[in-house]
Length: 55
Image (tube, rainbow, N blue to C red; front, top):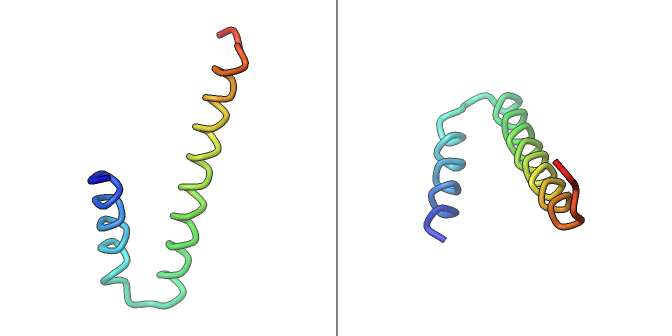
């Protein structure tokens, strides 16, 4: 839980001082896209382990 709060604080602090609206929203969208792609990669890895993929 502490790790999630730390990630949340880093996320909020990273966008706190960006002033331009377009740049701020672009980086927010890119951050969420990156989090989503990381989640998909972790899901795919565990799915392959669970179904017995032979490395």
